[in-house]
Length: 308
Image 1: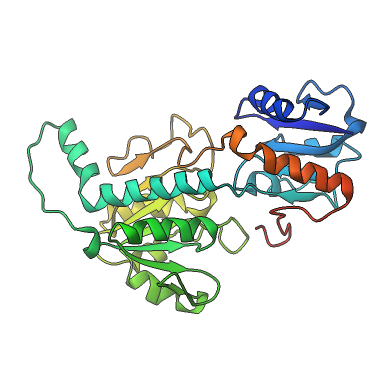
Image 2: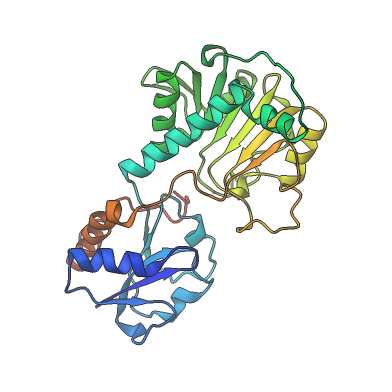
């Protein structure tokens, strides 16, 4: 029985040493140097080559290295019956919440506009909004969305949520799918924390941007597939929204030729809103490895058909 580490964007050696430090008896193989594919039953994965997991005939579980699983589920050649898990980690959640707070504060205090003025050596005083006068709408009010909402609310922001069904969570009004228009019309800063599903791909489009409050702004920390890129550029250029902060993209790394790089009102970060610390999540992965061997239910298992 063997574990394979597959990562095209994160250093797998660090993950291997962390896991071995907690259990020296582990048999870990690191892709692409896999000598015994038939022994592999458990994969720890981040952005694997499409079709790779067909090479491991006894694979039972694919564990994402992060909170997202779209990088796994978008592979149309996943072996049938293989279970998929995601990471739920307090530090990961805290880091995401702080990043969202950072973006919302920057918008309310005109930081991005002042940085543009610095480029042109323009001294221009602008009035700013207090958090209490800044409405933030979070699309996707699950674990990460609720944590971000709590941090924003604690810092004075007017917070609203959006999910499949309406509810009240920790004093925050969460609008249901049938109330999307009302949610958008009461949102200035739109934060996307949705999972990627067939229903949510392309959800951030011109029609949605037009429904936001004046001086609307987009913060996307979910996945690049949510954004209709041409619509976003048009919305900003036409003054429909003020700008966007993007941490995720349809293609990563973002190609040098992409128009997002040079757009003055689009802020880019390289998928760093929250980054998994192997030390923080190793016990969770090893617990699922043990559960797999014992035939027990897994922690944080994803519904492959629903996508989350």
